[in-house]
Image (cartoon, rainbow, N blue to C red; front, side, top):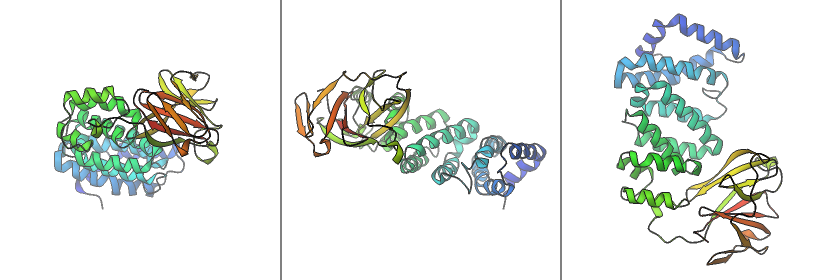
Length: 334
């Protein structure tokens, strides 16, 4: 059942909408009319009704933008009932409805940003994408400030465990409402300007732990064998590349972004274009798992067979002789 607001938009632009659909069918041979009509009914229709309750005059522009952006994605099975990544499709639908005030203000920009963010989040971890969606829907629901909502999305991407967004989050954070940031970062009190600066100077720390004394501590693992869904064709080496903590398997180099919220491998490019400096910031690690970093010395059972260790910006990366994974630890200046 199609509601009155969507029906009016589709009726007034019937010839143009039909032409867009026919062109999409020519480009994407697998596009079935029933799949697209189901998406229109199940996603565009409720969005039209919610936007109308906020600003009825915005419905035509919203539907026009969403029709343009989503038709090829339904055809390619990114959205709709046949979606290859159900979390992306469900999260997108939820956020279109939750962020209706911002969507009404700039539908093309908001929808495009959500699709791009959800694609990256789902590639990293579908559970993180769901967490991000729930937080963004809850905190940004009543705001028509498009810039603020999208900036909140960057902060939340960092918060749910994608540290590659840390710099963008720290840049965006001070300009957002303090209550948003308090909720987004699970804080007992708002962050003041001094604490934002402290976060910038402590690149591996979380926002909720700035008062504690940093220690050498275990974080977890990153990477893995390519044949089992990981990134590396051979056991990787760790070093620095372009001033970032990085790992390489001789074919490709990845930025190893990590902090207290999580770890993320971000492809930099070919190893020839992004060579590793293996010696910079190297630490002493023994094959029995004993790691020495300045005043810190500790034996980790997990690090037995260690081949090398590198410290950068509060993070230690340890490569092993028996694994394709890279061990990650946090450590203040060694």
